[in-house]
Image (cartoon, rainbow, N blue to C red; front, side, top):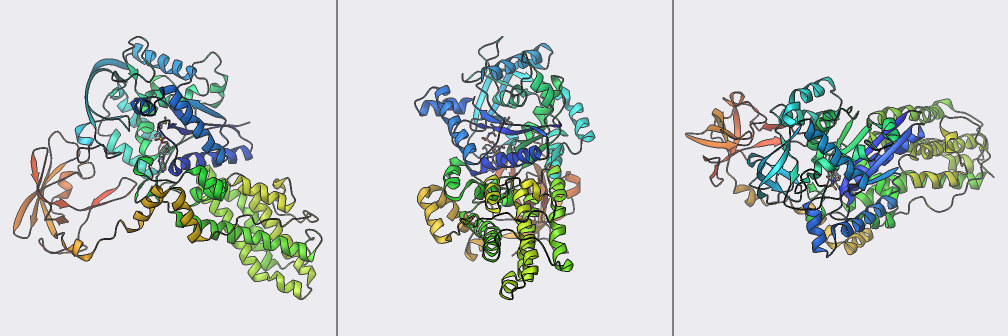
Length: 636
Ligand code: MSP
């Protein structure tokens, strides 16, 4: 049996999970279920990341020991995964003794082989993100990832000699162009973080206690990211007495991660594996964020309804469906309660639920059981039958690239076709006219189409598939894999609606009542970008021409540009050095905000801002007028 090893990131046990967190794990669960359904021997891993200063601090604030605190949080994680029907095979905790043993062992091995050395770390650290930054990484002096203040730290520490593996990593990416998807994110990591040079990484801390200690220098706690990344191999027994599971499942076939943790997985993780002599995972799948107010959902910003509450009220499959259909497979995607409720109503309740109840009602009203297909109208029937028969290969194709979104859309394309089939064949008219022979075929085909939907939904919406199986009176949904005319005679039962129709207003009120803070963030989402024309008029935008551009010494982000705006020439500093070679910019037109307060960056006074457009895939371009406009020209 072919093995298939799937991992999710391990979640920080510093607080509860929100809907955004659930995205990664729901994706992974769909992939796990799908691969099991095609006969693979799946190992699906998730878990908790339990060490670090943030957890130590949160535990203290809660009046608990760190271990007592994470135990409670982890119980909560498991409740969320239960509510969402997540079928993980193992839940790894970084506080597991076997995991901690392995972390120590690998640290020692890397030290012994010269990959880790002792030095002095001076720099900046973001506690919530557990990440060190160089001054030039900061945005407005704050953490570039979470926007919170960073702390200055200076301490003896052990460094991981990542720089030694620079060439190897570059060659690895060049020879494995499909290692990291989406491609744009891979390019961003490669061009902006690998190519310019990888620095050695400080991999221990001495300012807190809660973590895995370096056993030959116990003042030092191993950096949480080294500790955390190793979960993917400790969980399957690497380095233990019995490595059978590890031998069977490593390398991972797919590792799901969010875009915020891609750098760690795309640089440190491959180097770590290579340094200890292990093969690389086959695929890193990096998704975007579920956003609210244009920002990553995050508890600290008040966002995100509780996933368990949503599952209890709307069913796990409603939450799963919304996440996989409209979620951020590659690009960020916004969540609003209104979108969520409307999607349930239109796709699940109307398109699927109504089709099912109408079909079953017509079978019950006109026949004893599912009728035998009789009179065929090839022109009308065959497109539906073809869609049923092609579905398996279309889903296989989508799932080979982990495109869960495309797979679910294929299933709902069959639902849409079946609804069109009802419109064209008009079974109620056939019944009225007593054309029972044609009616038999039409209802049989609809029955089969619904069976096919249920069969394929098993990997994505398991509760719905099971309910449908019982309503369709077929225990073994695999019978619907390929169209045939043998499944007549089943005693269907219409039962309750698959998804209850929701009143949008009532539900929005309900959601507001259960979590006013999350609802408030959401409401702001709709109005936050609205400004008046007077606000806009306050900004003086002009066309400028870049006369010269040069790098600012000591910064890998900033360019000092000399820009002509009408008769005036100004210096404008912009953070675009990673995207443009200064020479490329000379002569280009651009759009400048001219009335920004001057600011000193790296000792250079900047007067204004050059406008740029960027996307989630890491592309950035300066904005230019579409044709010749003299410098100084107004932009409005
Ligand atoms: N502990 C680290 C991962 C270590 S893996 C060796 C971590 N934990 S986390 O709890 O902060 O995030 C877990 C996952 O949830 C990450 O993949 C992250 O990208 C994802 N998400 C957190 N918020 C999210 C959204 N709003 N939207 C989509 N995914 C998000 O990072």
